[in-house]
Length: 163
Image (cartoon, rainbow, N blue to C red):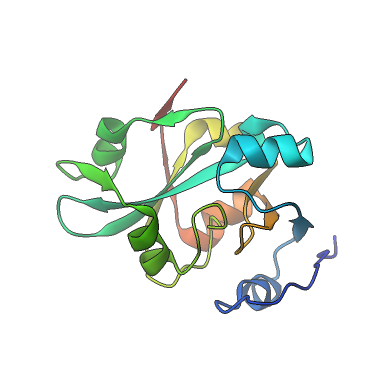
């Protein structure tokens, strides 16, 4: 499949170029600006469980990680800490999360971040062939094959969410 790309200004991280150079199928979808996955689902009609929350956190060992969970679930920080072999994890506030990832909350993709992040993908995400995540800005989503997210990030999978 060929990538479908809607050119958007302000892609300072080179997300589109990164995806093209990686040779993975992807598709950007323009939408009204949103921060929360429920709002993105309402704006696009995409099922909430297919839009991921990409949560930047810091472990008790001082490392940064990205937790990828379905939009209709909440992260279980204790299970996330176990998956990361850390005593605990703390979600970052919006400003710090943007500084670490390079993207605004609501626009954070599951791949290609400013800071190297260990990525944990919730096992329930694996039920979908493709998922939607932040597309680098709050005004677009990025659709990727789930297997490509795992491949590009070296993610580990674990049960880190709850309803």
